[in-house]
Image (cartoon, rainbow, N blue to C red; front, side, top):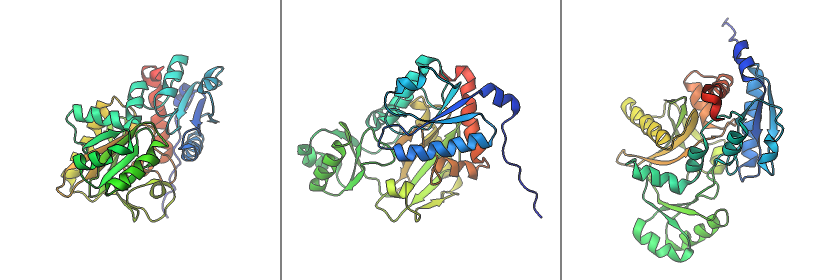
Length: 321
């Protein structure tokens, strides 16, 4: 018989140091439902590890959540606007409440896909050719300058919400209008044909990369959270030296934005074998379909240990507060 593996438990000293932890989830963004799933999973894992944790569905004015806090620190599981874009980070910092993940500027930059790409471009990191689009009337000009196919994205949404692949100017107009209904800033970038990879980061270390494949046109919202036919490759299928190159690129992207503790970087590889940065996620999903827990498991880190390690960083340097 195999010895039964003991469930992960935070040490009594760490539990005391952490105090009461509020897991912020839900919110009002387009990613509310995913956030509720992530937050519920994080809450259950923290409680299983022995941490005194409570869940809070944070809706409406975020200031109300910190006016008379009944907790010592916050695990942020809010995805999208309000929770991932620096807003909540600024409020918690001003209130002196430690919180998980990246600070205000890094959160705001990473949430803005267009400005993230400006930073990549300025730092010499590879990212697909792109431009902002402000009107459907620009479609012909955009196609002439970037070629097709193209990816059209709301600049401030996550979870692949509102993203479309287009092959001509007419499709671009339609995709632009759909994206503009979600966001006042629309990003158009050259479509990279080839495999997609994602690299999770934990405490300035790259975890094993995951190769993604789906029958969908790309790794969209349904493929991420709903479909059961999305394929995840761990090992990712790259030669060892190429995976190291991929992981280093992810670390470089994470660092130039000033991100910290944990996150995820999405990367494409073209037919020539070159890697291209798409975006950085500072509060990635933590659902049963999510990639960071999957990558952590491949590194021998269970879900309970993962969330405690993320939370533990709030004890260093005041946890941003």
